[in-house]
Image 1 (cartoon, rainbow, N blue to C red):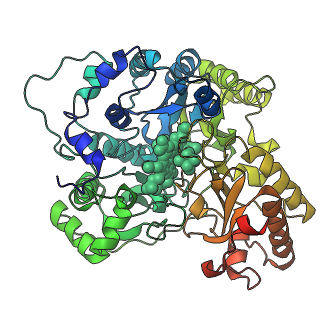
Image 2 (cartoon, rainbow, N blue to C red):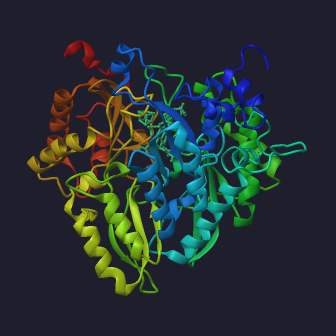
Image 3 (tube, helix red, strand yellow):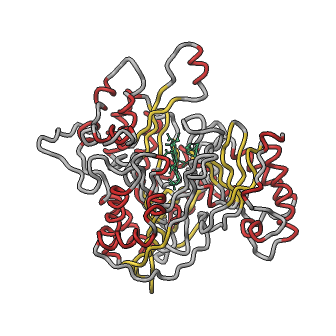
Length: 562
Ligand code: SRM
Ligand code: SF4
């Protein structure tokens, strides 16, 4: 390793396959934090060190160390879990976390506010329920997304099977997790990471499997994507995509969101070989100097797509066939009841920003616990932070609906735009947040809903996605309206996604405060209501309309003007 190599590479290389000094860090009673290098290694085990940013200033003034706690992210391919597992997830969140569960945009759940002294028992408890957190975070393949596809369960089972296999195949093989958290026996002989090697990947790596016409996994925003090709109800194979990603850095044009390229069509049995080939290309060619430029999207840009495809074919021994035509209609969720051919039912619930907790007015944890106590099917977390209660028997349909209704979990009482929209976690836990997202978004949406009513367009949902910084955790760069945190109370406004996750939006205005944002949206919605074509989406209208200038060169910075 030369002196230009990113320090994270050295930490990984010296970690003895992800052990580091995590055990010692856990046992250190003098601090609620981990040693700095361990805070990097811990991510591969599924947890992040955080501090409560609401308390940061006050604690510094009182010469106290930050209020450290941990966020743990589970691995849950396709977001599927059983009612028994749900009850365990719920119990652990209440007993050992901060009393809330957070469903994420990658179909899994997070606990926040875990104290260091509780981490090990928390990890043990979820593992007893057959859920682990290996590769929840870190420079490896992350939780694999899979369309929950409720109205076609047999096909879902086949495709979901592949999502699980990819997740298992690309797991780190080190025994460190079992040794440190589950009291597994230390390895005596030599160890290796056959796919990753001892420095793992240069950066995180994300995989999704989509079943058209639903693009709820936002397949084009992933490093690696598989689009299921179905003929006569049978899985024929996959169109393979590579090189999608959302993360950017404000005002650094060398970073950008990117949609994945189509590589070609493969048979189902070639899935793992091709996935592994792509991962190893990224391992060998990804940028290990600048983490900002280390995702696969930049590797492909540097290599060129043709060379990349040749490398994948050579390494895998699989020759791509021409991509098959596919059509996507939405990247949102399908709420409410859907009947299966076998007369069981699925119910998709609305969970605002994925946050499940008991508040004085609404008790979501309690409601879902009551459902899990009687439900005999399964649960599926969606990539839009919602929850599907799947395979409900006919005789339990009414009782589950009644519980969901009692606990405000049914979608039919919410505005269509709210149902189509999501926000990332941001403050107070996320260290990267520059502005609020989850805590502020519901209020902002209420104001946007009033505008939609003013122009009588409330029946045309608009996909709005807000993030507290440009990292893009709620995939805002494919939203019809993307709001990206710039500073406290200020957001960049992006416009022009297509409501299906197939088109990147463009920066329209910079650094808006709420008043300017609402004034700008007021004008845009008025124009949209007056000039749209029948059935035309807001995102399509702004791209078509000559009245809306989406040229990035003319973007005004409102910091100076307001
Ligand atoms: Fe993310 C980092 C939350 C999905 C791009 N993301 C973070 C961290 C861990 C902050 C940090 O670096 O310490 C956030 C923790 C906040 C907290 O307190 O919980 C965080 N990301 C989330 C979640 C929970 C957002 C949500 O509201 O649901 C999502 C968890 C997904 C999961 O279960 O695995 C989440 N993050 C995403 C997505 C969406 C996706 O994957 O489909 C993206 C954009 C897609 C992509 O990766 O390109 C995303 N997160 C990032 C990035 C920017 C990566 C980049 O290439 O530049 C970071 C920062 C980083 O990696 O350095 C980041
Ligand atoms: Fe944090 Fe930024 Fe991700 Fe939001 S987008 S969770 S603020 S890293």
